[in-house]
Amino acid sequence: MRGIRARNTVLLFCSVCFYAYGGVSYLGLLLLSVLVNWAAGLWLSRLEDGRGRRALFLACLAYNIGILVIFKYLNLFGDTAAWIAGKLSGHAVESIIPAIALPIGISFFTFQIMSYLIDVYKKTVPCQRNVADLALYVMLFPQLIAGPIVRYSDVEREIGRRRTGLKDAYEGAFRFMVGFIKKILLANAVGKAADLAFVLEPGRGALYAWIGVICYGLQIYLDFWAYSDMAIGLGRIFGFHFLENFNDPYISKSISEFWRRWHISLSTWFRDYVYIPLGGSREGLWKNCRNYLVVFALTGIWHGASWNFLLWGLYFAAFLILEKLWLRAVLERLPALLRHVYVLLVVGIGWVLFRADTMAAAAGFLGDMFSLTLMGTHERELAELLCGGKFLLQFAVSVLFCTPVFTKLHDALEERRLGGIGDGIVLLLFMLAVCEMMASGYNPFIYFRF
Image (cartoon, rainbow, N blue to C red; front, side):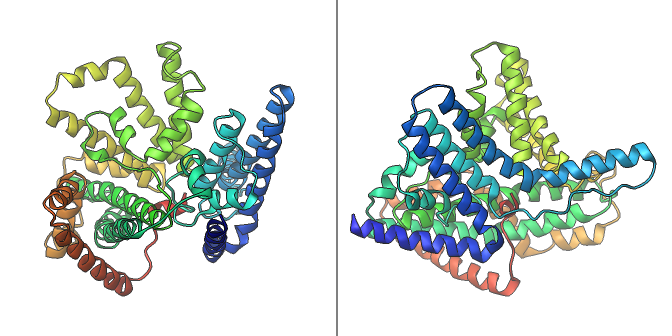
């Protein structure tokens, strides 16, 4: 036990320093959240079921949600109110709410700590009596700022007792390197093409628009998956087993399947703490549709304080409802290839809403995607992009990573005891990625801003 206490202390210290390096001004907010929820968990464990216990739980839940509202959404409310006032008065109106900087990882650590509080209230997990251990659960640096969202029940035993060996170090390091390679050599490369397409004014042409949205779909998947891989790998090195966050979402044959495979830690969080408590699919078709709307509206605004994100969430809710009502029966009659195309088309249009800075920009981009003009006013930029051999290779490999092909190849090598070949390739690519990162400079993960 002494050994685990020392290791936990070192890990907690490193996690505090890690967060302070990225945003020391909000370290106090994070520590206060840990302290408040630790005290609430202790208090809830001592109270008998009744109004007092429920009132305490709701008050602490309101505190956590209030932090999110103040730091993430207050500026949106102020800007929206100012816009409405300007429309009514006929002249520009400034928001009276000063700009509030977004604490790093607030969406992730708030949801993580709320899951602990809810589980303690429901008595599905015991409260953590050691405040340092709860702080370690919330602040563990591999997954602190961009997930995956870890449930307390998944790591409760490992906080107090875990063993690490050479196998953990090897598999964790391998997973970390694979994630790093995805980020530096693939996500950043296709991301440059996506950025070029999205910064252009309408008139980019259908071909450029489609290339842009395909590249962004690859970028956000590989970028977020890469961070999840790196977090899972680092966690494994330290003796923690985090659950997978992605399961080949782009091979899905329906939107409901896509959301079972995409950002699994977030979708299961909303399923367990919002969708099921609202009644899930048990209380009739129309209430089920209402539950989809609520869950995906919240999913949208969880990603960012913008009406684009709300529309993005409602957009997916609409397709889930359509699949529930009649579309699923139609899809089941179609060939698998057409069902894949349906998912990729729906998700691709959704990424435009997600990526565009404003509703007007999203409308302009969608207009270009479905324009009859194949080539717009940026033929030169498009030709330079498509003629780059390095980019085409990175694009092709990125597409392959959206399928299980590399996983199957790795498993086949392991079965034939040829895993050393794969390890050597990964090590070489990792060193290449390090050189690429040093040459290209800082390029943050997309989900750092959520």
